[in-house]
Length: 284
Length: 168
Ligand SMILES: Cc1cc2nc3c(=O)[nH]c(=O)nc-3n(C[C@H](O)[C@H](O)[C@H](O)COP(=O)(O)OP(=O)(O)OC[C@H]3O[C@@H](n4cnc5c(N)ncnc54)[C@H](O)[C@@H]3O)c2cc1C
Ligand code: FES
Ligand code: FES
Image 1 (tube, rainbow over the protein chains, first blue to last red):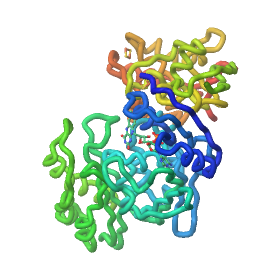
Image 2 (image 1 turned 45 degrees about the vertical axis):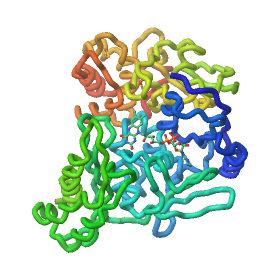
Image 3 (image 1 turned 90 degrees about the vertical axis):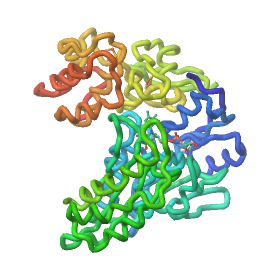
């Protein structure tokens, strides 16, 4: 299938990209890795007059340390994020989730910023970003603002990034030394998550000192399992104790029903996957 | 129309293209590299896999304009002077194809897997090929072919001048 015709712009700076966006108004689409946008254009679910490619903007790419945070440029690819020692050391659960995204070819092109702005509830990077209390740096003609993860994901395919704005970077608070695991439940390899759980855990003397749990595809946005996070504090990292603390993982969720499973099936999966994720993250 | 310059299998091409043209259509219709095939409309099957600057991508999910200034290697660029690339030879010897439709993409992805990890386990080979579907072989002989290449002393050594080289 072939997309509808469009004009193509490839700015080389954020300022030029914002100017192009402002001029084009709502007739423009931003292109990052294209791994979600190009299928959408090919199926003609969208037919923008202009496509503004961020791929030639060097300043949007790369991973660096900034005090207590790791800063990831919006167009950093999954592959580059997987190779990053900084992420491995300070935000391991994000890398664990990226390993489960699509396939090697798609991870070469797909970007973290593109995936986060696309905000597919079955996408794998939202839950770990939420679990890590990631801050989202959004830039528009009025300048830069920072949005907390809890306010970034607003609804199905909807985020805090407004018209004429770009997600330029994410800032991840360092979770150095935290155990991590992403438990993705699928029927076959190479599938979107039916349900998945991102867990990152700080263990002290054999028991859980802090826990952060993000849920994938248990609602229209990624969700935090806050009841489980509280229940896990002080709990021994054993199968029995963790099982009990994870029982409430589906509390407050509103999962979809589709060909892969009913909402009830997903509610039944969540505590089981959460227990597996927590135990693996705790190294138990 | 936008002018792009792309190196394909070692030769530089300069063409006016519509921005909406997919890289796979550019390769097949403008450059004539019909060895790269289209198997799906959803970027799932991997049949269209090529190397872009030495790393595998699905060419049905890249615009030709995005490849401007870059290098592409297709299945037609890995044999040198009529001598098959070791991965092509291994696919032949291990009977790793039946209808052959998935083969161009499968071979380029298999080369990429070994470029990343010259001695993968069977599991790592299967996971590395997860974005490439084969409807005929059941994958078993494909995995064997990759293992055969990986088992050689110098894994994917190839004739001089080949464009899809191992990054040592
Ligand atoms: C076959 C297949 C399987 C897949 N499987 C999975 C999977 O298992 N798990 C998973 O999580 N994902 C999966 N994906 C989706 C993949 O992760 C996409 O790469 C990702 O969702 C989009 O990132 P991108 O950089 O390619 O963005 P693009 O496709 O370029 O853009 C996506 C959207 O975000 C907007 N956008 C992009 N960047 C910015 C920015 N910086 N600022 C503002 N707006 C922006 C675009 O306008 C567009 O609307 C799969 C995709 C395919 C084709
Ligand atoms: S044709 Fe490109 S992935 Fe199927
Ligand atoms: S050999 Fe027929 S699809 Fe693989």
